[in-house]
Image (tube, rainbow, N blue to C red; front, side, top):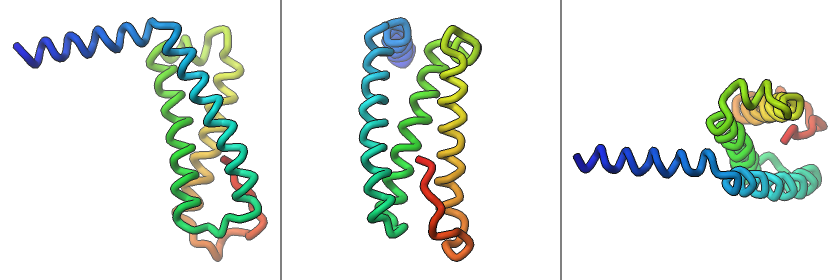
Length: 124
């Protein structure tokens, strides 16, 4: 019975967030700030990155935040609402950029350094 009540309250809380414009606006603000911080990070990484673990972890954190944004928005608006709604073109562009970033980070982690060109810029 306690588990059912907990499930009910968590479902109600998520339904409130999902339908709440303020949550969507707050998510947009957090993602916008993250984009600005990521831009600064990219500028710094172009000059100072040595490919060490902290730089890779920072890339992973930014990628995770951007993927989480898409997951939240798809959950809030539904797959068709997100990718076929009034902002479909922007959402498709966003998803493609996030996919390119994910591929870049995955290659950075899995492909040995000697196989990469030193002048290849980061995608995130």
